[in-house]
Image 1: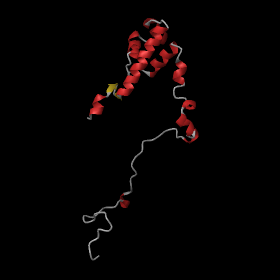
Image 2: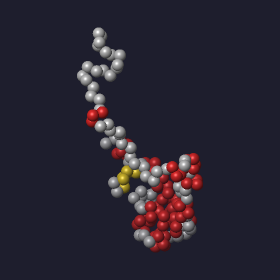
Image 3: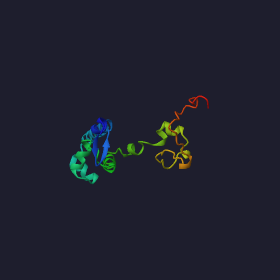
Length: 139
């Protein structure tokens, strides 16, 4: 296992890249700040969200295993849900606007190497070096 893979945090089997973990941690800190700025207690916030206080603490601590639904509910309680909805809106995606939206596929399949039928595969001989100019003299 490479050093990079060892350094990745894991959540329910999924790897979390360090930069993503830092971003999620900042998001949790910001949510906690927004809650406190609105003078909402953790008990009230959790009740409004329909979750336990421990889940709210995990969200505010930046636990990457907390669900997207939990984040969405927190933003809704804080009056910030529209920001989540507009996060990847195509109107604000400059690259997306430059591409023809209708030309984009609905799904993108993983590319596989093109395989040739067995009768089309070239089998090099033991004396063939691959260079056409490398013919034996006198031929």
